[in-house]
Length: 233
View 1 (spheres, rainbow, N blue to C red):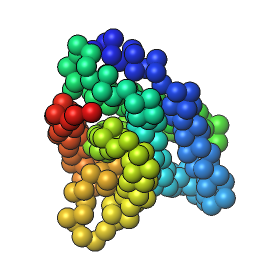
View 2 (cartoon, rainbow, N blue to C red):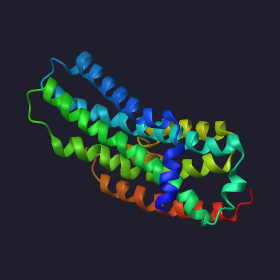
View 3 (cartoon, rainbow, N blue to C red):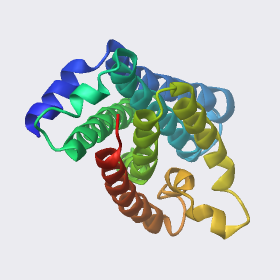
View 4 (cartoon, helix red, strand yellow):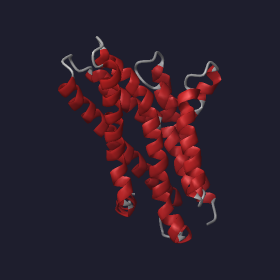
């Protein structure tokens, strides 16, 4: 498995390594600009900015997942080597799992950069004590909750050679999540696309959505591995 992960990492295109950094910088830039234009002279504006971050955080991570999983799978689709890859003496589910793990690792790098960048910006811009618990928990909880979405996008990107399907579904899900999470119909909250937006510690009952992301993510990953094993390329 380690060799598969190493091989998958070596196959990564430069885009996959640049995207987590660019997405983290862009998110922090947007949040900083939003604070400067709206909360700079407002008492407690620094803390109000944290509530704004959670609105953009889930969308940023989900869009990153959409692009990362698509680009990672497109390498095999473009070179048409899925049939040869599946003939190597390695269990097919491990091939699928390696892509999922690398996608998670890249997203975790993005989350780590967001946490580190938020702490640095807080020290530079604000005089109030940094709410480290929120700064750390908010991105980490969102990361855990987005695992279900990673499983969905990994499956779409691998199964469909036309990556516009995976990207279109991921982009639509990313945008819809912002509205579904605020729906007055509670049943819609159980859709995997809503978990990241509902996982912020600023909302009551956020823990169940973090747990839902983990559990549903593992279930969908197992289902994806099973389907990949049975699929004829």
